[in-house]
Length: 181
Figure 1 (cartoon, rainbow, N blue to C red):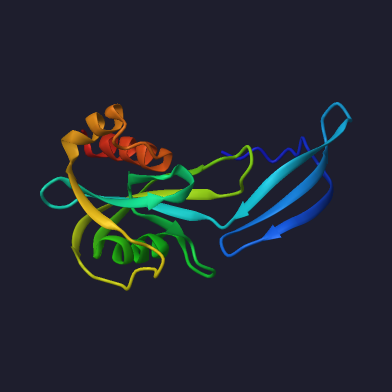
Figure 2: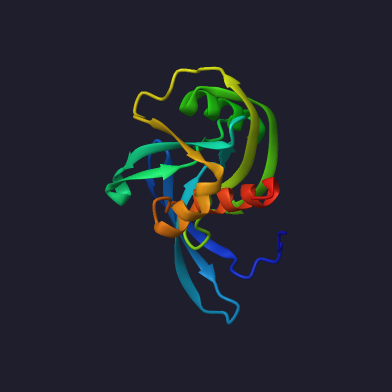
């Protein structure tokens, strides 16, 4: 659902950083009461995340070190949508790069803003079933371990904090609902 009313029109915009993955800008905006203020915004391309479930009802998660969290996190496979790529194509590519599988069926679970208070990143979440081996070379700066977790252990993993990444929690809970778990 999208609300097209612009309650904070942009008066001016200033680019402050251009990176490989993100850009940062500061927008001067007008509030509904007429006052002006600024918003710091991180521009990020749309992205995807995928809940891959194998024939034995295991979820294939990835364990990787996340520098901002200064910790290893257990997550669903995810990544950016490349220019000219549809979300579903991106989901299939990321599955091959991160867990070495493709899916016979991809079901869109939902789509959501990751951090709408300060970022433009919009993420599409999928359930992947009918997995079969299909490997693409992974990104050179990613060091990923694939971890199989039985589907029925996912709620406990979330409750215990073993899975604490927001996109993973949201997409896993939606997948459980779809799968009747």
